[in-house]
Length: 260
Ligand code: 6PG
Image (cartoon, rainbow, N blue to C red; front, side, top):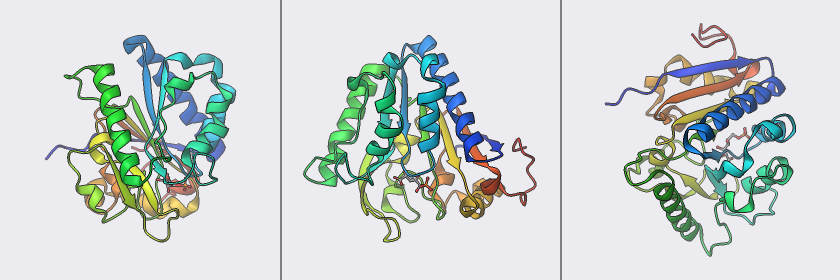
């Protein structure tokens, strides 16, 4: 069994400080990727938590980033129109994309205008396969430079939910899924573990006391958590970094604030 890549944990006072920290680290990774490979690819997270960090990237780091070399993808999407209030694209567009000079052709959203989630997943799968074949060539095993992921209170990440058959997928990079009733909209498209774990870096972000139990469970015993929680199954090629605020981190699992 492949040992999970070591986790780093960065703890911040609150969501504001965490968002600034993530945005600063993403900016550094962009600079390194562009200087080494001429391009940077990121799969964005949906949900509420990343909005502030997207706004920080657009406000505080806009001039440090070579936007023409940045390519934006999504880790998952709800099967809703692009201007729907539940759309992950719409959230990223309003908080980041519409505020920075990233070329239109560098924004690769999940095509929810397709006639079904199945079709949208097929189209996105082909888009990713074609892109990464052209980007890294056949021999390149990597997908994204960074996958940015949130975590639900049940331990889901992207739209990979506990017990989902999608967690057993070994080949496909993109699947249509139905989320549990608690998480609407239910019809979704998600990247799979093969796609997410072929990334170089994974940044998992968690904020708020409602995430403390799941964050504590996973960070206290990542190996034990792996079979139960999709967020614990995230194991990228190079580095996994957890970004948590004090409310989500708690104090109980004996790790100091640098996660050691
Ligand atoms: C989505 C996200 C999902 C999200 C978590 C946390 O499409 O909803 O990809 O995985 O990151 O549900 O959401 P919050 O940040 O809103 O708590």
